[in-house]
Length: 326
Length: 276
Image 1 (cartoon, chains in turn brown, red):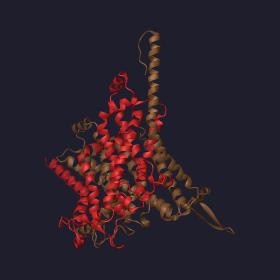
Image 2 (tube, chains in turn brown, blue):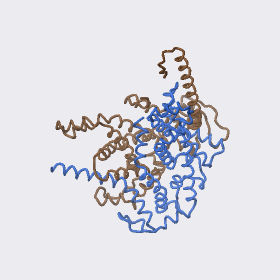
Image 3 (cartoon, each protein chain N blue to C red):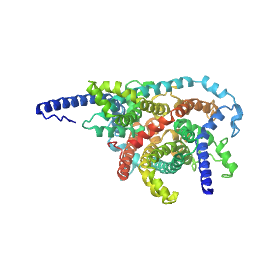
Image 4 (cartoon, chains in turn purple, green):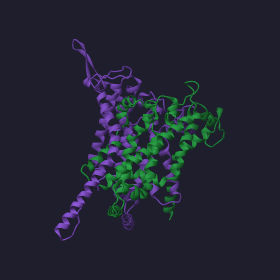
């Protein structure tokens, strides 16, 4: 910081004092600037999170004013003793519906994010090529991203309609299916309907992040590969893919965290369908629909822990630098 | 020669597939919204009707115009508030070295990854305690949880790249930190502010979970919830025409914004992730 080069010791000290004073002033200003933001984040993130975790250990119900006694881990797991050695485990961790929700969420996340990564990579490769109208295609793929999730759910709900849906019409015309399918209500296809919409809506995000990674690649590698006569497919797998791996990793993390908490799409597209109840849907049902605020809070806490755990694991395993310090 | 033509054809086939795949659902919503009566139940691939009945219906019935106004109000307030809070905060994070800066940045990034459901119960209690239930202020407050970390993050990466000489010159001239931000940096930051503001606007406009939970009064709802809950005369009868019309109404402004600002949006999206 201090770069006074004067040979006079006195002047040097003076400069140094002035400089530290300036720095101190600057740091004080920095904290003043940061305070409003920190206060808002404490109010909307830290405090509500703490309260949610707290409620998970109580018997709070919205219909019972003043309820909220501490009951320990009973919402999570509790041995209900019938006496005489008889009894059963109750609580979220003993609830098959919860485990079904966990399974649904993980299934959805793995399948949807995998498809999105592959499609995103293809779209990014296409957009990375030179062709007339590239700007148009890039704008076109931004459309699904910009459309509100609720609207895309409704649009697809209509296209997937069992009687009047265009997708059944199209698939039957092509000969893919012989009879109309009730995509969103049939247990076999409900999850795939959700995946279909999610892939449509979020592949653009994936593609744009991967494209940004591609555009940072140095062009001379490709020149060299071309001169050496390396096959383009080989170039892709040996050069491009390893180099854009960090960009893909970041995109996958973002998408995974998003998928693990999916709520709106399922709430609108396949309501009340056991096949597609995810952890967020399960938690909200208990919080507000089943009048089981504490139980729902406990489920929310579990989801929070799962997401936090996944993030840490992924960052650790992928050595992805998210801290932003250069 | 032959090979490169094949390659060109392959590329163009892909381009057409991608464009049709991306645009078809919205196109189909538009042509559906112009069909009235029983025409809606006829699957057609090309526009056939141009009836405005669904649009007139949705704008005249219920609270839809009011819902649009609510969404605009909430989204604008969220953008202004998060930009105001983020500009000064990101100056401190980008340009001042202080103890705990790394930890603070990391915490902000973690907040942006919070599942919304994890704060839902706590926020609900707070909203009721403050008497903000059924009040749009509850949404403006709650939306800070996802717009603020993102805005701070992107503005910080942007401000970090501004030349240090500018700041040094201003300090030599005796400028105070707030003068540096608003007089020296602000004029240079417009592109970043537009980008982050747009992304925050779209995020607030599209939000569903909080809007569904903190508002139960039809007149106070925002558009995503209004569309999700749009129902027909009977329970079985889903009013697809009006739903598609409403969907088109709330999406067209977004699509126009995206087309105008596509470069900025792409830059902002990737700055939020890759550059960090």
